[in-house]
Image 1 (cartoon, helix red, strand yellow):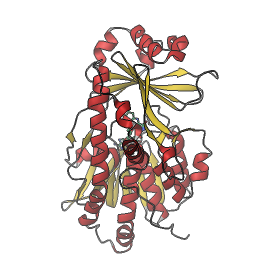
Image 2 (cartoon, protein in one colour; image 1 turned 30 degrees about the vertical axis):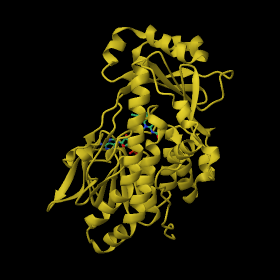
Image 3 (cartoon, rainbow, N blue to C red; image 1 turned 45 degrees about the horizontal axis):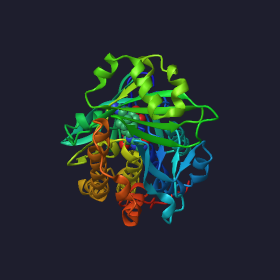
Length: 411
Ligand SMILES: Cc1cc2nc3c(=O)[nH]c(=O)nc-3n(C[C@H](O)[C@H](O)[C@H](O)COP(=O)(O)OP(=O)(O)OC[C@H]3O[C@@H](n4cnc5c(N)ncnc54)[C@H](O)[C@@H]3O)c2cc1C
């Protein structure tokens, strides 16, 4: 972009994570003029989650993308569980459900986002602006009518009938709209880093291990392990103060096969601190604005379901709003607030239920593990067949799975 520019679109989506990319694609596919703003120059960041659940793969199949998605390098994992004090507990087993894709596919998120935006880029109604950071909303007569954003060239704005905040858990659009989520708290933050992977390592997608007041998750990225080391909230400075060796020792203790290469971690400059939040807005909308994904309800990493929820929000929003957006595109009629309210109503129960599950796991699982307190016998609970089946469904499919309802506009 050279010089200040005003873009116009029917819908402006701030943020091209899973929620924004899926919504942008769905709207453009239905002939709605959409501008998606992404503040980073690329999608290549390690902190993005890697888990694509059965219901999200089904959405990709409904978009005609399953084959291309499954051709990306990935690992399939059909159980979700953890190892605590040397004992393995499987919480969910998707192979017991009648699903077309009975597994989580671990795919680097940049590959998933590239797939979605490359598909969208073929559509005439889609425009993605990279390095475009939304920092304020535009208002006219009490309605939000777009966003102000900056690129390396300066400040610009988008005028739109509907603005969608899909800019994640630190949403700038949410702040500019004056909305504040209710915080539920999280007992941990995450330190993320890489260690190399060898051919002799286990060929698994994911390990979560907890023992002696420490917890670490390792994700297989082919040539390296992406590691999420959990720290008690507020414990980061103390960890840093102790130097890098205790961190190396913890990883070596918890994940024995990595002991021979923890030295690759030269210092804290090789790590990245990630804040975990769990919160939810009471109202996911204002006149002219809808919030979805983490911008409406930040998810904790527990069970790796945040991407799934974000995608499901996007599908629900497209199903409910597309016809109104198509009308607005032709007549200029504003999007009725009852329709953005309908999106929140549709997604409320799945969000509240999943967050309740994460809060329980945080309180009785992670918090106790990080305090090295005795844990309940989770194994006995999840061995009950009904509990296991319910957990498998809840994690793999969610409470109210969404399906793509609108056919693509013929071109
Ligand atoms: C440490 C950690 C690990 C996690 N691991 C997993 C996991 O493995 N699996 C899982 O399912 N969930 C995981 N989660 C949760 C998951 O990351 C989120 O629930 C999910 O990414 C939400 O998707 P989203 O599209 O709403 O937001 P995001 O993924 O946060 O995407 C927001 C996008 O908006 C962009 N953006 C931000 N601000 C602006 C702005 N002002 N203007 C323009 N663009 C902007 C960002 O660059 C980003 O691309 C994890 C969370 C944390 C904190």
